[in-house]
Image (tube, rainbow, N blue to C red; front, top):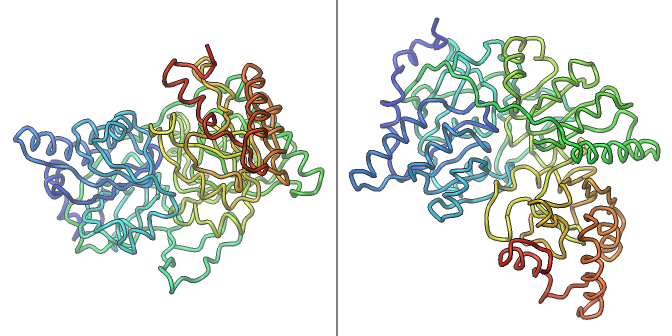
Length: 503
């Protein structure tokens, strides 16, 4: 049975191939999707075919591509493969898309996830021509039930000149009621306080409001999200998770945190999963999460009774857990809230709720500055995503990484980061498999000594000590000692020889 219940919109049901023809070269397109959840399943591939055919005819055809965050190979990968993306924002993780960015085929604006929606509203990102959004169903009144991610969809639907909807019957119909779509955001000077004071508060409505006159095509699909199984936590991830959980326990004993902690945020990956697994057996109860994505570990915490509510903007579940969510969505509706990312990543909300943030990084330097986006200064990896939304505003902000990479050829603790994403002013805790450095209340020189001894790999620790002592002798000021000739020398050595270690 069709899930398109509105009579006017039912008449607009068509094929993805016909819908793709409505997207023109040089236009900006906002597509749903966040970490492989809730992205359109058919229109991107059809659009890629249109672009490929145009290029074969010698015609130019690229679009500006806006999303919530990363998507899936069927979207980013398909469009990047045919050189169809001239501009990309705000976050990506597809290997083909990454290659096109680093080759200069696609321009990329790496911006904070909380910034994109208001920038679209203000028009500073240019005109948004088309929204391509996956939904679970279209109701009789023309409203649409969100699917497994919300992201920037509300803004795309409101601001786009034309709308293409993909109605995906794979998504559970019982997702309806899990979402909280807030329509109260405004641009300055009309902004008002967002009245959210607890993680599970619902301040919006269940479904998207859609102008039916802007809908130019509706496609019916039945295709699963692109979910990948999480790797089992390795020994290093478990050690880092252990250090973080010991730190939280210590903070509770010192009465700097309540006994059941504050709302948790974590990035996606092995360490995040290991932390969540550790919480299962930890001393904390009635946990909450105010984060970007719901991961497998959070579902386990909810099932165990350890977590009372989790707020996010999307799912990031393995296939097994995605099937469980689809089968039992009704059971999770009062435990999970999916919001627009301008609310899930809202700096005021993060600060007000006192979120405990833990994110991954590429490298940190001895003073606590963090690079989370670039390899060796120039090559984009994925993007900053929402890490800075949380880091700058969290009650406690931590970053984790193994101390070495590439079999030891790279030290993830360096004299100076090759690209700055998070400054020493925002980074409070650094964790590697070697240990944890609590940087709060420390001067730069005190931080340097602590990071070198607690976080650096033993094979690089003497080199870092040597650099730090040398920098104090040649610097032009003792607040943050550096030798600018040598501070990025480790990265240059790697580019020239394939290792940061001297020959």
